[in-house]
Structures are given as structure tokens and as C-alpha cells.
View 1 (cartoon, helix red, strand yellow):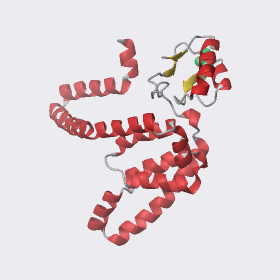
View 2 (cartoon, rainbow, N blue to C red):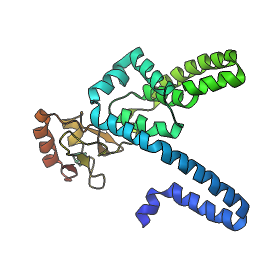
View 3 (spheres, rainbow, N blue to C red):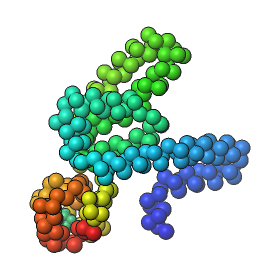
View 4 (tube, rainbow, N blue to C red):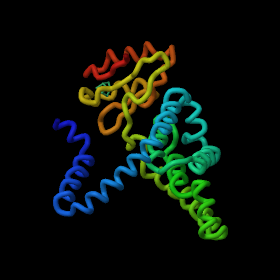
Length: 240
Ligand code: F3S
């Protein structure tokens, strides 16, 4: 129970706020509940599509493809692809987070993720059409140009401050080809770093704990992974 509360702190706070509202301002509580149901309904409609998309990215698109097209070395092409992905997306901004998390997990760069998120949020094509209709084409075009410049700048600056290791990663987010999962038990890991030193393709240290950064295990790498799991002094690495 303690663990459930700890991992859902925000939800617990919201629940307490609702109880307080219901006691002291019942009318506001009803209005808030209506708003919450509206957003839950919206999420239920959009999230299944997003989850399918993230599963496809995680399970089917090879890491190399994402690295090549959205990674650090992807240059202008990566920026353009990220820009197009965000611009032609649909759905609210919160739907972009799981997609970006999946892209990051497969090697996309921080700056390109900023571009995807920002274009998704503020210069989506359907939104631009509406903007032109209500505020005029000139307004829309000038705002689009200035926003685009800002987004590129923000992406560049963010990448200077935020590094890959600062992003929390799920140790066992995706499946390897034959259904096996590589994972690190965070409760057991003592941060000795053998795994990350031996295979920086699969493991990375973050906050003194090892995390799995790639589930893609080539046949020639299986033995190495098994050896790393055996060498781990905390027996924290599992491949099953
Ligand atoms: Fe942790 Fe074991 Fe790696 S202790 S750092 S998982 S080798």
C-alpha cells in the first residue's frame, strides 16, 4: 500500500484535493469532475492509437534506423524528420510523450525530441489552418516562422543542458526478437558498472544504477549478455 501511494503521489494529491473540494465547495467539485471525465474520455480515445504507435517503434523499428534518422548524427535530416513528425501529428500534446520516450529509447537525440514535442504542441498543420482562418494568413505565417526559429534554438540549448542519462528510462520497455526481455532490477543493482563498461550498447549508468538502453540483442551478443549477467555481483540482470 505504501509503495502504491509512493508511486502515485500526484494521483493521491488530486484525490485529496477532490475530497477537500467536495467538502468545502461542492459545486466546484462537480464542475471539476465533469472536466476530468471529459479529459479521461479524450485520453481513452487517443491513447490506444498512441500505444500501438509506441509499441511499433519499440518492437519493430531497429535502433539503427532511429539513430540514423533522429539521432545525434542525423544533422539537418533528423531535424527535418522531427519537424515533419510533429507537424503532421494528431492529438493532444500528452500523446506525444510516450512516442518521444520510445524514440529516445531507440537513440533519438534530445534536440530532435524537443523539435517533435514543440512542433506537435504549437505548429501542427491542422492547427495552422484554423489559426489562418481565425487570425489571418499573415499572422499565421509570421508566427510560424518565428516559432520555428525558437523551436530550433530551444532544441539546441536543451541538448547542451540535458543529457541522455538525465532522462529516466524503463529498464525493460521493449521485447527482443524471440520474446526475451533484458532487464535490470533497480532494487538489487549496487551500481558497480560492470555491465555498462562491458556493453555500452545495452547498459548505461543513470543515478548510480544501471539501466537497459537497448533490447536489441544480436545472436553474436547473446553470450556476452549472459556473461555480464553472471558477472553482476548483485545478480540484478535478467534475460528471460
Ligand atoms: Fe548494477 Fe550489476 Fe550492472 S550491480 S551496475 S547491474 S553489473
